[in-house]
Amino acid sequence: MLKHEIFGIPVNALTYQDAVDWVTESVATGRRSWILAINPEKIMKALSDEKLRRLLLQADLFIPDGIGVLWAGKVLGKRFPQRVTGVDFLSLLVKEAATRGWKIFLLGAPPGVSQEVAHDWELKYPSLQVAGHHHGYYKAEEEAQVVAKIRAAAPDLLFVAMGSPRQEQFIVNNRFVLGVPVCMGVGGSFDVLSGRKKRAPVWMQKTGLEWSYRIFLEPSRILRMSALPKFVILVLRRKLGMLKQEGDR
Image 1 (cartoon, rainbow, N blue to C red):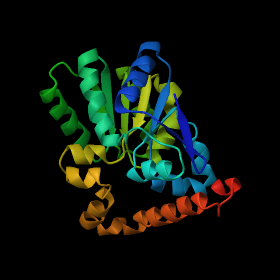
Image 2 (cartoon, one colour):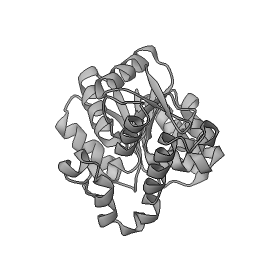
Image 3 (spheres, rainbow, N blue to C red):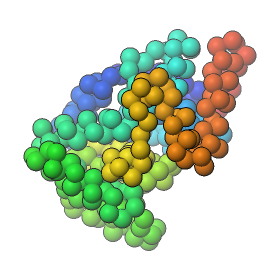
Protein backbone atom coordinates (compact mmCIF):
# COMPACT_ATOMS: atom_id res chain seq x y z
CA MET A 1 0.00 0.00 0.00
CA LEU A 2 1.33 3.45 -0.98
CA LYS A 3 2.82 5.36 1.93
CA HIS A 4 4.07 8.95 2.00
CA GLU A 5 6.24 10.62 4.62
CA ILE A 6 5.35 13.98 6.10
CA PHE A 7 8.35 15.26 8.05
CA GLY A 8 9.52 11.79 8.87
CA ILE A 9 6.12 10.38 9.83
CA PRO A 10 4.62 7.83 7.41
CA VAL A 11 1.03 8.30 6.26
CA ASN A 12 -0.76 5.79 4.03
CA ALA A 13 -2.41 7.10 0.87
CA LEU A 14 -5.70 5.22 1.05
CA THR A 15 -9.48 5.40 1.07
CA TYR A 16 -11.90 4.15 3.70
CA GLN A 17 -12.44 1.01 1.65
CA ASP A 18 -8.70 0.39 1.39
CA ALA A 19 -8.44 0.64 5.15
CA VAL A 20 -11.40 -1.71 5.69
CA ASP A 21 -9.84 -4.24 3.32
CA TRP A 22 -6.57 -4.00 5.26
CA VAL A 23 -8.38 -4.65 8.55
CA THR A 24 -10.28 -7.56 7.00
CA GLU A 25 -7.00 -9.19 6.00
CA SER A 26 -5.52 -8.60 9.45
CA VAL A 27 -8.47 -10.26 11.18
CA ALA A 28 -8.48 -13.16 8.70
CA THR A 29 -4.77 -13.85 9.13
CA GLY A 30 -4.61 -13.01 12.83
CA ARG A 31 -1.62 -10.73 12.35
CA ARG A 32 -1.08 -8.27 15.19
CA SER A 33 -1.80 -4.83 13.71
CA TRP A 34 -1.99 -1.30 15.04
CA ILE A 35 -3.84 1.52 13.31
CA LEU A 36 -2.65 5.06 14.07
CA ALA A 37 -4.47 8.25 13.09
CA ILE A 38 -2.08 10.99 11.95
CA ASN A 39 -2.79 14.72 12.11
CA PRO A 40 -0.57 17.84 12.09
CA GLU A 41 -0.56 18.08 15.87
CA LYS A 42 0.82 14.57 16.20
CA ILE A 43 3.46 15.23 13.54
CA MET A 44 4.62 18.42 15.27
CA LYS A 45 4.85 16.67 18.62
CA ALA A 46 6.92 13.89 17.06
CA LEU A 47 9.34 16.44 15.61
CA SER A 48 10.17 17.76 19.08
CA ASP A 49 9.90 14.47 20.98
CA GLU A 50 12.18 11.69 19.76
CA LYS A 51 10.70 9.18 22.20
CA LEU A 52 7.21 9.84 20.86
CA ARG A 53 8.43 9.62 17.26
CA ARG A 54 9.94 6.19 17.89
CA LEU A 55 6.71 5.13 19.56
CA LEU A 56 4.52 6.21 16.64
CA LEU A 57 6.74 4.57 14.05
CA GLN A 58 5.86 1.18 15.49
CA ALA A 59 2.32 1.39 14.07
CA ASP A 60 1.34 -0.69 11.03
CA LEU A 61 -1.26 1.48 9.30
CA PHE A 62 -1.16 5.29 9.38
CA ILE A 63 -4.47 6.87 8.40
CA PRO A 64 -4.58 10.53 7.21
CA ASP A 65 -6.91 11.86 9.89
CA GLY A 66 -6.26 15.60 9.75
CA ILE A 67 -7.28 17.83 6.85
CA GLY A 68 -3.89 19.50 7.32
CA VAL A 69 -2.17 16.28 6.35
CA LEU A 70 -4.04 16.19 3.03
CA TRP A 71 -3.20 19.85 2.43
CA ALA A 72 0.47 19.22 3.16
CA GLY A 73 0.45 16.25 0.80
CA LYS A 74 -1.05 18.38 -1.98
CA VAL A 75 1.51 21.15 -1.47
CA LEU A 76 4.45 18.76 -1.31
CA GLY A 77 3.33 16.56 -4.21
CA LYS A 78 2.34 13.64 -2.01
CA ARG A 79 -1.35 13.31 -2.71
CA PHE A 80 -3.81 11.40 -0.57
CA PRO A 81 -7.02 10.15 -2.23
CA GLN A 82 -9.20 10.73 0.81
CA ARG A 83 -9.21 11.93 4.39
CA VAL A 84 -9.82 8.98 6.72
CA THR A 85 -10.93 10.38 10.08
CA GLY A 86 -10.53 8.30 13.21
CA VAL A 87 -14.10 8.68 14.46
CA ASP A 88 -15.67 7.94 11.05
CA PHE A 89 -13.40 4.96 10.44
CA LEU A 90 -14.26 3.67 13.91
CA SER A 91 -17.97 3.81 13.10
CA LEU A 92 -17.36 2.12 9.75
CA LEU A 93 -15.39 -0.70 11.40
CA VAL A 94 -18.16 -1.30 13.92
CA LYS A 95 -20.68 -1.62 11.10
CA GLU A 96 -18.30 -3.99 9.32
CA ALA A 97 -17.82 -5.99 12.53
CA ALA A 98 -21.58 -6.50 12.83
CA THR A 99 -21.70 -7.75 9.25
CA ARG A 100 -18.67 -10.03 9.44
CA GLY A 101 -19.14 -11.38 12.95
CA TRP A 102 -16.05 -9.71 14.40
CA LYS A 103 -15.96 -9.20 18.17
CA ILE A 104 -15.04 -5.77 19.49
CA PHE A 105 -13.75 -4.46 22.81
CA LEU A 106 -13.95 -0.84 23.97
CA LEU A 107 -11.29 0.52 26.33
CA GLY A 108 -11.09 4.07 27.63
CA ALA A 109 -13.06 7.23 28.45
CA PRO A 110 -14.59 7.94 31.89
CA PRO A 111 -16.50 5.17 33.71
CA GLY A 112 -19.80 4.36 32.00
CA VAL A 113 -19.05 6.00 28.66
CA SER A 114 -17.67 2.97 26.81
CA GLN A 115 -20.56 0.90 28.17
CA GLU A 116 -23.04 3.47 26.88
CA VAL A 117 -21.44 3.59 23.44
CA ALA A 118 -21.38 -0.21 23.27
CA HIS A 119 -25.07 -0.34 24.21
CA ASP A 120 -25.97 2.19 21.51
CA TRP A 121 -24.06 0.17 18.92
CA GLU A 122 -25.81 -3.04 19.99
CA LEU A 123 -29.17 -1.36 19.50
CA LYS A 124 -28.13 -0.10 16.08
CA TYR A 125 -26.53 -3.39 15.03
CA PRO A 126 -28.32 -6.34 16.72
CA SER A 127 -25.79 -8.80 15.30
CA LEU A 128 -22.80 -6.92 16.77
CA GLN A 129 -20.71 -8.92 19.23
CA VAL A 130 -19.36 -6.70 22.01
CA ALA A 131 -16.75 -8.82 23.76
CA GLY A 132 -16.39 -6.29 26.57
CA HIS A 133 -15.60 -2.77 27.68
CA HIS A 134 -13.60 -1.03 30.39
CA HIS A 135 -13.06 2.61 31.33
CA GLY A 136 -9.68 4.27 30.99
CA TYR A 137 -9.44 5.67 34.52
CA TYR A 138 -7.68 2.72 36.07
CA LYS A 139 -4.47 2.90 38.13
CA ALA A 140 -1.12 1.85 36.67
CA GLU A 141 -0.99 -1.18 38.94
CA GLU A 142 -4.37 -2.31 37.58
CA GLU A 143 -3.24 -2.44 33.94
CA ALA A 144 -2.28 -6.12 34.09
CA GLN A 145 -5.86 -6.93 35.16
CA VAL A 146 -7.27 -4.86 32.30
CA VAL A 147 -4.98 -6.62 29.81
CA ALA A 148 -6.03 -10.01 31.20
CA LYS A 149 -9.71 -9.03 30.82
CA ILE A 150 -9.21 -8.10 27.17
CA ARG A 151 -7.19 -11.22 26.43
CA ALA A 152 -9.88 -13.43 27.99
CA ALA A 153 -12.57 -11.70 25.92
CA ALA A 154 -10.58 -12.50 22.73
CA PRO A 155 -11.89 -9.64 20.56
CA ASP A 156 -10.96 -9.18 16.91
CA LEU A 157 -10.86 -5.39 17.21
CA LEU A 158 -9.75 -3.32 20.21
CA PHE A 159 -10.57 0.40 20.29
CA VAL A 160 -8.50 2.36 22.82
CA ALA A 161 -9.79 5.81 23.81
CA MET A 162 -7.29 7.12 26.33
CA GLY A 163 -5.81 10.12 24.54
CA SER A 164 -2.35 10.49 23.07
CA PRO A 165 0.26 9.31 23.85
CA ARG A 166 -1.22 7.12 26.61
CA GLN A 167 -3.30 5.03 24.22
CA GLU A 168 -0.34 4.52 21.89
CA GLN A 169 1.87 3.50 24.80
CA PHE A 170 -0.75 1.03 26.02
CA ILE A 171 -0.96 -0.60 22.58
CA VAL A 172 2.81 -0.82 22.15
CA ASN A 173 3.30 -2.26 25.64
CA ASN A 174 0.57 -4.88 25.34
CA ARG A 175 -0.32 -5.53 21.69
CA PHE A 176 1.34 -8.94 21.49
CA VAL A 177 0.18 -10.07 24.94
CA LEU A 178 -3.41 -9.05 24.18
CA GLY A 179 -3.64 -11.41 21.21
CA VAL A 180 -5.95 -8.99 19.37
CA PRO A 181 -5.60 -8.89 15.56
CA VAL A 182 -6.34 -5.15 15.25
CA CYS A 183 -5.80 -2.37 17.80
CA MET A 184 -6.72 1.23 17.11
CA GLY A 185 -6.34 4.37 19.21
CA VAL A 186 -9.50 6.46 18.92
CA GLY A 187 -8.81 9.44 21.20
CA GLY A 188 -12.00 11.18 22.31
CA SER A 189 -14.27 9.28 19.90
CA PHE A 190 -16.30 7.63 22.66
CA ASP A 191 -17.13 11.06 24.13
CA VAL A 192 -18.28 12.24 20.69
CA LEU A 193 -20.32 9.13 19.95
CA SER A 194 -21.98 9.24 23.38
CA GLY A 195 -22.97 12.86 22.79
CA ARG A 196 -20.83 14.22 25.63
CA LYS A 197 -18.82 16.22 23.13
CA LYS A 198 -20.21 17.79 19.98
CA ARG A 199 -18.58 17.37 16.61
CA ALA A 200 -18.41 20.23 14.14
CA PRO A 201 -21.17 20.49 11.51
CA VAL A 202 -20.50 18.48 8.36
CA TRP A 203 -19.79 21.59 6.28
CA MET A 204 -17.04 22.61 8.71
CA GLN A 205 -15.56 19.11 8.57
CA LYS A 206 -15.49 19.18 4.78
CA THR A 207 -13.97 22.68 4.58
CA GLY A 208 -11.26 21.92 7.11
CA LEU A 209 -12.64 24.23 9.80
CA GLU A 210 -13.34 21.54 12.39
CA TRP A 211 -10.38 22.75 14.45
CA SER A 212 -11.97 26.21 14.90
CA TYR A 213 -15.18 24.60 16.16
CA ARG A 214 -13.19 22.64 18.73
CA ILE A 215 -11.53 25.81 19.99
CA PHE A 216 -14.93 27.52 20.19
CA LEU A 217 -16.29 24.71 22.38
CA GLU A 218 -13.07 24.15 24.33
CA PRO A 219 -10.95 27.34 24.51
CA SER A 220 -8.38 25.43 26.56
CA ARG A 221 -7.40 23.60 23.35
CA ILE A 222 -5.93 26.76 21.85
CA LEU A 223 -2.43 25.92 23.04
CA ARG A 224 -2.65 22.47 21.44
CA MET A 225 -4.00 23.98 18.24
CA SER A 226 -1.02 26.34 18.03
CA ALA A 227 0.73 23.42 16.33
CA LEU A 228 -1.38 24.05 13.20
CA PRO A 229 0.12 27.38 12.09
CA LYS A 230 3.61 26.05 12.90
CA PHE A 231 2.86 23.03 10.71
CA VAL A 232 1.67 25.27 7.86
CA ILE A 233 4.87 27.34 8.05
CA LEU A 234 6.99 24.20 8.05
CA VAL A 235 5.21 22.84 4.97
CA LEU A 236 5.63 26.13 3.10
CA ARG A 237 9.31 26.31 4.02
CA ARG A 238 9.78 22.78 2.65
CA LYS A 239 7.89 23.71 -0.50
CA LEU A 240 10.09 26.78 -1.03
CA GLY A 241 13.24 24.80 -0.45
CA MET A 242 14.02 26.58 2.81
CA LEU A 243 13.96 23.38 4.84
CA LYS A 244 16.39 20.57 4.16
CA GLN A 245 15.40 16.92 4.45
CA GLU A 246 17.44 16.51 7.62
CA GLY A 247 15.26 19.19 9.16
CA ASP A 248 12.43 16.65 9.38
CA ARG A 249 13.53 15.65 12.85
